Every structure is written in structure tokens, then in C-alpha cells.
Image (cartoon, rainbow, N blue to C red; front, side, top):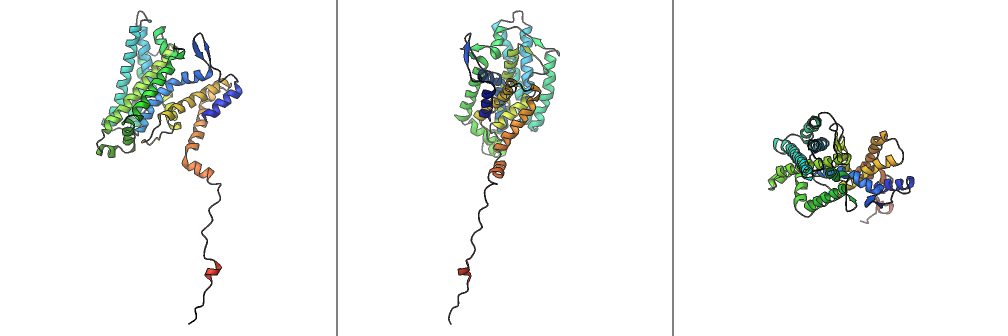
Amino acid sequence: MLVVLLLSNLIFTPTFFKVEVRDGHLYGSLIDIVRFGAPLIMVALGMTLVIATGGIDLSVGSVVAICGALACWRISEQGDQNSVSGVLVAVALALGLALLLGAWNGFLVAVVGIQPIIATLILMVAGRGLAQLITDGQIITINSSPYKLIGGGYLFTVPFAILIALAVTALAVLLTRRTALGMLIESVGGNAEASRLAGIHSRRITLMAYIVAGLCAGVAGLMISSNVSSADGNNAGLWYELDAILAVVIGGTSLAGGRFSIAGTVVGALLIQTLTTTIYTTGIPPETTLLFKALVVTIVCLVQSPAFRAKVFQGRRRPAPPPAGPTSATAEKVEVPA
């Protein structure tokens, strides 16, 4: 599906695959897809680990709004918004709060035992109000060059947000596929009680997954607010939790837990961002974005469904002939002389 979308862009926009360097910066539609998709990749990576443990996190969109609001509010209170030390303090405060929010979700799920969809729904609702409380219901605008680097800057001609997403993805692959951590996560997601009886600290694994999800959402919030140099507590990160879940599902991770794919999640996030870019570049009204997104997700899910494939592709095959019965020759009675 991702290849089909890219080829359709090539038909409507012949220069779609053109990548060039302007003023020492990489430019092009492909670069824009990865750059603007970097926040979704971050959120989806954290969501992948949570879903792999058999849970779900509906609060990541609110965490995005909270962290962006806190960082921008802290910078706006400074006398010199271009102070590097001041920006680092603001980033540290935002990421520290993201860790606490993730730990709160993990505490409710792993320790208290509340259903993940209910536990994270609490922060989803309260978090949006907290973000508006930080911004006092207004859009906070800042003018900080060091903070602009996170989501809208470049390093070595490459957008800095892409480098952050690549580093976090590589770290996630290293920790989950080169160590036993990935196996432990899948074990807890497959059967938490059996994992506990086998000596695995399932509560710690679940708590860790929610903390990582909160941290990834916090980084995404910094990217988004940095790119637009403002914080909107009402709209920042809106529906990001649903896009992240879609990216995870498209990537092949089971919603029942016990199996996950980091690479598939990244491809799923890029597919969603490519679809959005395609709608804008082909002149389709942006109000239809959600409809196209639902259509693509439905097609992908149907193609990935074993029951659907068996019914569509194997249904055309002719049924196997019944086993041959006894032939007339063998069925004939044979007279035996006395």
C-alpha cells in the first residue's frame, strides 16, 4: 500500500521523488514525509511496546500537548528565549513530566490492576485540561532558535527530527531484538500470569512499557511545538493516539499482545503520513483526510486478515474431489465354489 501511494504521487507530481540540497538543507517531498511523520513514529514506537504487553495507551495525545505546553511556557517566561541552558531546562522539565505521566499510567495498570483502556482514558481527559491550564487557555508563541532545532532545525543537512526518530528507532530495535527484553515483553503480552509463574517480573515489564510510551509522547510533543514555535493545549496532539494505534496495527503488531514489530510500526506511521501528504499534493479537500485514512486502514486490515484471504483467494479454488468409492469391479460379488 505504501508503494502504491508513492507511485500515485509520482503520477500526479512528477517531481515527487526529487531530493535536492538548498542552502545546505535537504528538501523534497520524501524528506517532508519522514520529517512530519517523525512525531507519529515516536508516539507509535511507545504504543507498540504497550500493545505488545496486552495493553493500550489512549493518553499519548494529551501527553504530547502537556509536554509541548510546559516547554513553551517555561521558555516564554525566560528573559532570553535563545538561552541554551534555559531551553535545556525546559526540555528536561517536559520530559521529566512525561516520565511521571507514563509511570502514573503504568501504576494504574500494573499495580492497581485497572483495565488499560480505562486507566489511560483518565489521563486522556484530564491531560487535555492540564495542558490548557498550563497555557491558560491561550496559544503560547515563542521565538527561540535553540528550541526550534528540535522539530524544525537541521543538522548535517538532515532535519533534526529525522535524526531523533532514527536514533530512537535504532535504540528500540537494539534493546528489543538484541537483548532478552523483547522476548520478555512478548511473554508478558502472551500470558502475564504464566510469565509471573515462570519468574518474570510482569509488573515491572508493564510499568516500563508505559513509562517508555510516555517518554516517546513527550519527545513528540517537543517536536510538534518546536516546529511551529508555539503550544496549543487544545489541538496539539489531537487524535494522535488513534493514528499511533493505526500505525501499530498496520505494522502487524497484534492488538491481543504477545507479538510486535518495530520496523512494521515505522512503516505504518510512514504510510499514514504519506496518505496525508498525498491528499494535500493531489488537491483533494483536506476535510476528506479522515475518510481516506479509514478506507486505507480498512483495506490494509482486510489484506492482513487470514480469514479474509482464505475466503477471497481460496474460495475460487475448486473443491477437492471426494475420495473414490469402491469400483464396480470390486463391488461385484465373487462367487466362491463350495
